[in-house]
Length: 164
Image: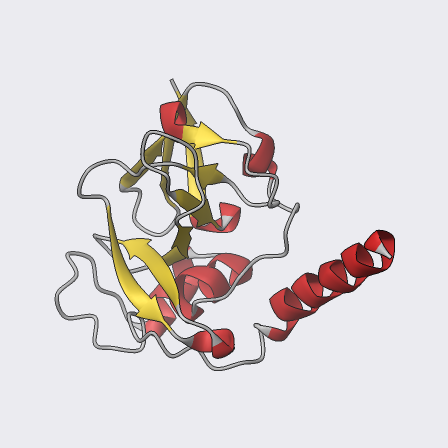
């Protein structure tokens, strides 16, 4: 019985991730005007500097498939920066293995990220976005480790890793 439940739950999670590509996002950070962000670009300008997958995640609030980012298993010392504007977002000192398939951190660099309410996928979550360009990074949950208890579950494609 436990195996059947696990398989059903796994199928539901994977289906939700893939279905999310086709549902309209409603949190509105990207949908709102770019006014208020230090870095603003037109959709065309973003498409020129981002890969199609980066554009999908950062500008259209998409989600990459789990276990596809090499940054999920990156544990070297360094800094994770926004793939859209190069703002330092997370230190490797706050990274941990959440087992979710996405890079996870228990705290961002102070002032680097902002949050908004995301009501897509028929649930309410807290969306995390870059403070400088407004790019969608992922979501934060309250099931992380000490000292914060937070799990910043980030899309690896929205980040770049700088060793050091």
